[in-house]
Image 1 (tube, helix red, strand yellow):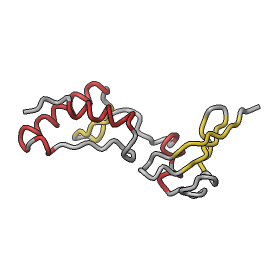
Image 2 (image 1 turned 120 degrees about the horizontal axis):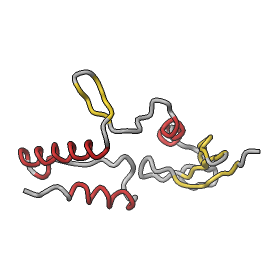
Image 3 (image 1 turned 90 degrees about the horizontal axis):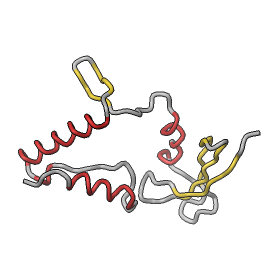
Image 4 (image 1 turned 60 degrees about the vertical axis):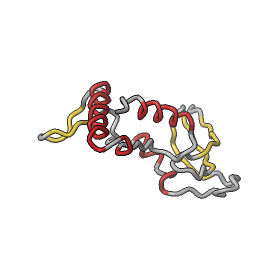
Length: 128
C-alpha cells in the first residue's frame, strides 16, 4: 500500500509565497494544490506554482549542463561548465566593467539559502 501524505508549504517561484499543499505518494510529488487556508492566495495558485510537477518529472527536463556547439548541444561536466562560465564572466567584466555581469537564481528574492551562494559566486570573480 502506498504511503500518502500532504506537506503544507510555500511556493517559492516568486516573492508572493503562496501557500500550497504538496501531495506525496511514496515520497514522490503527485499533485500541487493551493492551500485553501492560506490567507494570501486562499487556495489559488498561478501557472508557475502549478507547473512544479513538470519541473520535477518532465522527461525532457535538463539535468546536466549543456554546451552549444556547431552540431547542437552536448552534455559537459559541471566543473567544465562552471569554469567556462567563470571565464566568460571575467572577460565581460574586464571589457565592460563590474556592473556588466548579473545573476538570476531562479526564484523570488528573500530566500537566503540560495542568495548566499549567488553572492559568493558573483563575488568570487577577481575584481579588476
